Image 1 (cartoon, rainbow, N blue to C red):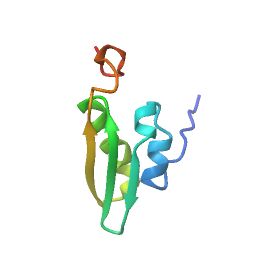
Image 2 (cartoon, helix red, strand yellow):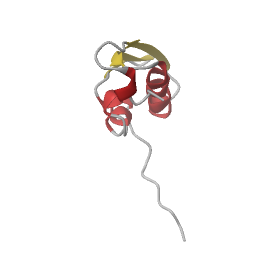
Image 3 (cartoon, rainbow, N blue to C red):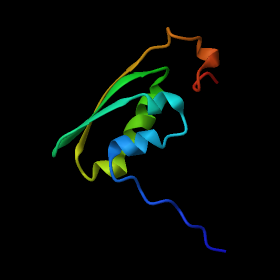
Image 4 (cartoon, rainbow, N blue to C red):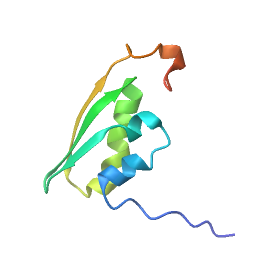
Length: 84
């Protein structure tokens, strides 16, 4: 049985829109020829790192500037995706 995978995202913003976690889908992406800049707020450092990894393939060798802020004040950590 062959498994067909979806094509990789063409743009970093598309990669984040496909993310399963809603916090990643709320991040902003600004692109230039040299840099992909991520901005926004997530609830834990894991999601900040995951945001960068999510756009890496679509960034196509461009530098990724991850300016995402980690802030747990908007909800208790136990309700967060990262509250383990």
